[in-house]
Amino acid sequence: MESLYLLIPLSVVLVFVIAVVFWKSVRSGQFDDLEGPGFKVLMDDDTPRSLPPDAATDEKKPGL
Image 1 (cartoon, rainbow, N blue to C red):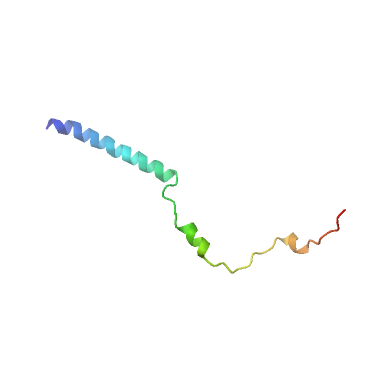
Image 2 (image 1 turned 180 degrees about the vertical axis):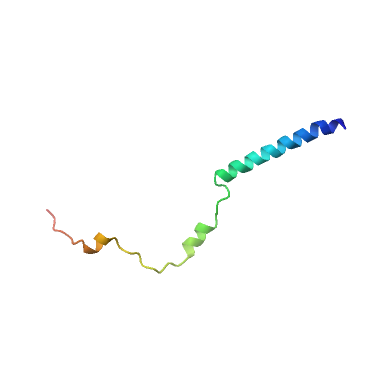
């Protein structure tokens, strides 16, 4: 019976420590999507990029 007086508070402290470590790892980005960027590289993007509005009208000016 006396061992429960020690084990119950220790288990509560252990759960609290585990919760704090888990919360810090979630906040620091440890569980971010690691596979998504790899799949984005493999996705085929055939849409042409649009040029900025001034790039189409710029003419090469002769050097000074």
